[in-house]
Amino acid sequence: MIHYIFNKNLSFDQHSNFEIAMFGMGCFWGAEKKFWELPGVELTAVGYAGGIIKNPSYQAVCSGTTGHNEVVKIVFNQNVLTFDDILSVFWENHNPTQGNRQGNDVGSQYRSGAYFFSDKQKHSIINSMHIYEKQLLRHGFGKITTEVTKAPVFYIAEDYHQQYLAKNPGGYCGLGGTGIILTEKSLTC
Image (cartoon, rainbow, N blue to C red; front, side, top):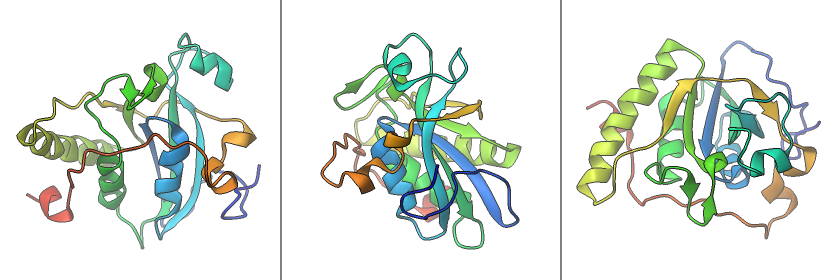
């Protein structure tokens, strides 16, 4: 598969100065768009992670029986973006307090998830989650329900899901944040 925007093979081979991140934020179409728009992001792809079967189809995931989450996998240039920059986009662009849903999208495949590839990423995710949860609680939201775990196997989604909102500019996007901002300043507090 070729990335529709970056015109690159959808390959997640490690390169120097590049880091990989993976998140579930509800429907993966809007989540992928949020990340491909960032300067320094080199590649994005949508897929399924965290379930009990290998190579699930979209239909199987939507059945709610596989345990997979709709996720976006990102390759970014560490010389341009930090992992904390990526985390700000993650936290600010969905509601991590909703459990198995995002807005009108309901089911375990729409859960909030932050999947780490290193201990450093794990620490950053947990630190930012605690800071963000305090801010959310102050503004009347509930506790964060985000699944935080070591990155499970990523199964790339079908080609028609990749960069869906670039191919279908008027397509559905149920992604919405809380309006609460996680700033660089708050990450260092």
